[in-house]
Image (cartoon, rainbow, N blue to C red):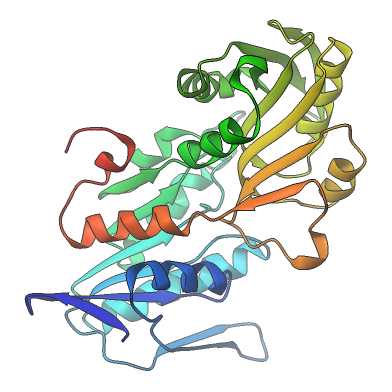
Length: 325
């Protein structure tokens, strides 16, 4: 069945864009529903057409779309899907966005720059979204950009539990690849009960995605180091951080990140590095042809399904992470 209802009062319906249908199917299986049949295609000039093949009137709609490459195409399709639901009289619309577009552009670093993450939030509000559900935003302040509820989910428990079962915690050191990741890394250390190290680095302001890595602050010699980050894009930061850690005497380096953007040379850099394992979630699709032996991909679908169920039942998404309602 496409949806589920509670005492005849409302119906949960799950929708998927074309960016990551496999994840939507996993979520649907967890929820015991079917993804609503949808027609979507491009016209000759590149404009996108979307239409749902079932009535959505009065439903509690959850639209799953990850903003991977080609990012602008999938973002636009996502907005059109929300608009179609609004115009078809869905009662409430939640945009489930495992990877949020433009999240790294969350503030002005220099004059005459946009705050693109805010603009994306405005797009969704204008399109008709009542609520956003996201996973591991690049910075938490983005939650305040959307004029409505934002459910910010964390992949840390999933990733950390995998690492703790695979590697002895007594040998681990968690490493923040830069100062901006220190708070996240501290949460890892709290969960794993291990020490923290930090990479001091500086980006080249004139070259996009280029990082200069400096010293390692913390005890890494003779230890297995876990570099934790929200995403791996070109893998420049991660591989240079790993080199610095090995130069400081680490015996092994693994990487754990939520979003596998894996742009350009990322896969080759990771394959050719001394990193022994790269652990990601499937918030973004990772094509079979770019899988490599060191890569482990964990499914985020159970977490998203539980959060969707809590929202649908007017429960507490915070309770999924041990917080209070």
